[in-house]
Image (cartoon, rainbow, N blue to C red; front, side, top):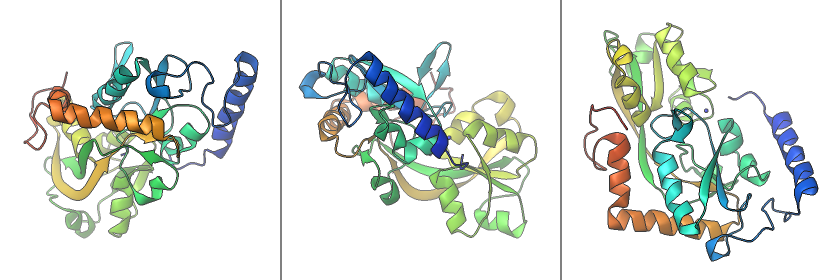
Length: 285
């Protein structure tokens, strides 16, 4: 992704960090790394809030994380719940700007324990984030009107079409490396709206997100996935650098789920198919 603006967020992040510091002083002590000094979870893992694993994400990014009634649900939510179960805690979800997630600021400021936001593992992000083992193989795709005649990025360039991309994402990075200068949108809903209203002729977005959009009748009737871009990406759960105790729990949870079939069940729940198979046209849960 990811998975949600390129407008500088230093002031907002600084304010968040200050508020957290003040709250810690007023409500109890905390370690210098932003984690709580309350009784640790199973395995001695220290968490930002006792009894909870706090997850930072950027909503909506269906089917990875989105609102369903009063709950936040999705593939990423279920993956983190595997670790929550091992820790004997519940999951608390915080919706923030994706730029603060991919920079590592969300974890460094004590805003959350983990980041799960359809986030691709990259060498640049590894400088600021400790990633789990990969939990999802991802790729990008192009989405446009059904009658667009587009089948590749080469067509977009030849036709001089307006290309849109979500800010702070690997999809944006990829098309920039191909020589494009796309219009950037703060999150995936704004990007989709730009396509629907003609502000963009074609958009680049993670393949599962596009496929989920197209399952909605009002979108699928007018638009289509016109090309796949095999970028060889993998998603990872992000943590604060050095938080190896939590990383061990998350890695063990993901590995065990893949071995015992739990991962496949979660995958099918949200994508309608087993990993590696052709995605189903059936709406997600």
